[in-house]
Image (tube, rainbow, N blue to C red):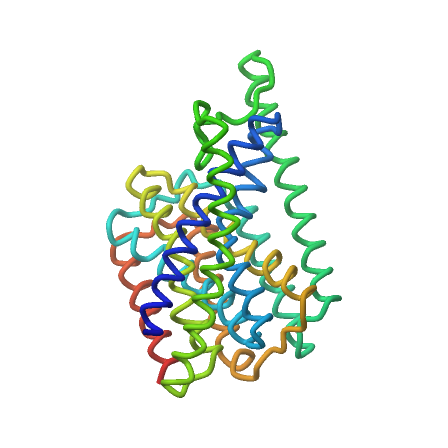
Length: 322
């Protein structure tokens, strides 16, 4: 029954998260918020909503290890699994990739997260530091994007325009108001219910099998909450959009570390368990650095590399469970 409830909670999270993104994007565009800002903030936050609700629910239920395990496990899964599986379908070409700056920001966010973890617990002070770093990175992203767009339009002697609405995930210029409201309500109601179901069921599964909530967060919950990123990356790979695939993973990882842990730390302390510091955090860092070899050296992630990435993730999960 717990497995069934966990599956129901996960599906509800994914559907509610998608509904919230669609509703928020279209509402923002209707009231005149620039599409560029929406793409860098609301969409990114919306797609991270399942992880955020899981973390907040875990703190409320008294299992903070599940919250940290979910973020660390999701970041590892995002690199090895979310990049590995699409690469096995079709190679990810990095020759024209322009995500170097974003990747370096992700490494900086990872280093900041690990540095704060050495204090033994993420407190409200840690949360403010992480959220300040997130605000700085978002501000830089908005500024850089507008400068890039301004330069491109200047070369064409065209007026400055925002990003195309069609490029935004979930944007539909013809979506009626009642559907926008329905999407928002569905997302706001479905997310907390799904999070509650998944956390409670995962906790019960952990106790039944004699493993910690942290391990469940590193594996079952992390894989589940990475499914939206996996679906997006697969589609980007099939469309030969390597920038989208890399940007999806890099952006998600930054929001997980800075946004989710930042907000969660303001709600309650997140103690860092010794096993996380001894193993899992360093696996997360190693996988992030491995991705850098391909981003910085502009090496294509071929099918062989995709298989290696996926195999490494399987080995990691097995090592966590045994």
